[in-house]
Image 1 (spheres, helix red, strand yellow):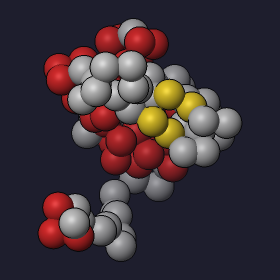
Image 2 (cartoon, helix red, strand yellow):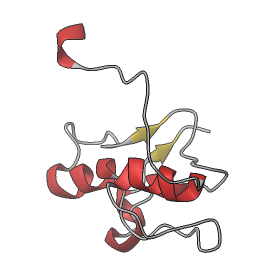
Image 3 (cartoon, one colour):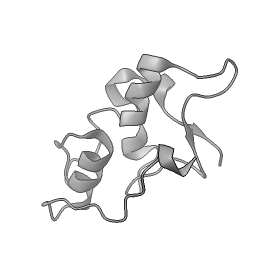
Length: 93
């Protein structure tokens, strides 16, 4: 099954701000900073959830293990933001 996924060993951004870099990495867009760190755009997993839904009825389409948190914010930039909380990942706790 390993031919179906890729490992990222390093990620780089040109911002010295962790909030900006984290939001850009998880959403593909900027627009946040340490001074204004609320998520603005949906996590790419939330976009896939909105478009495709669950693969199996009764199962969550997106899961965060142990929970979705980015840069001390929960669900942080893993959230659906303007798409709504229904595309946030299921959090296992």
